[in-house]
Amino acid sequence: MPLSAAVPASPVESIGSVGLWSVSLAALVVLLVADFAVTHRPHEVSMREAIGWSVFYLTLPVVFGLWLWRAFDAGRALEFMTGFLVEKSLSVDNLFVFMLLLAAFA
Image (cartoon, rainbow, N blue to C red):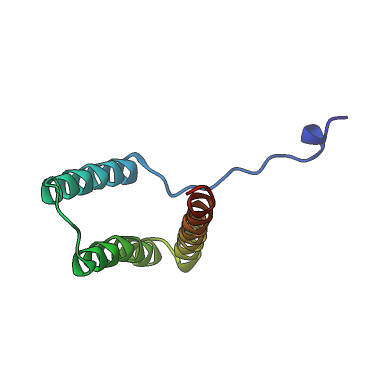
């Protein structure tokens, strides 16, 4: 007897809806257009500008997590923030790996 026949599958709950996906895609397009419109000219990025952009792009997921908490529940918000923090820490880890590789072959 296969394992799938022994245990009935439970339905997966999702908060994803057509409206939420539409708003997410529209927000992505608006952010990309705004980013390209503001940073289209080549220039040397100052530390102040880099910090400003970093704070802006780190604030967005925090605000989204707070919205998830209010609109759905703390569990959904915690799942999102956990995933965000794991992905952010892995991306920072990749920067150190690239730095070591480039330093080794430079």
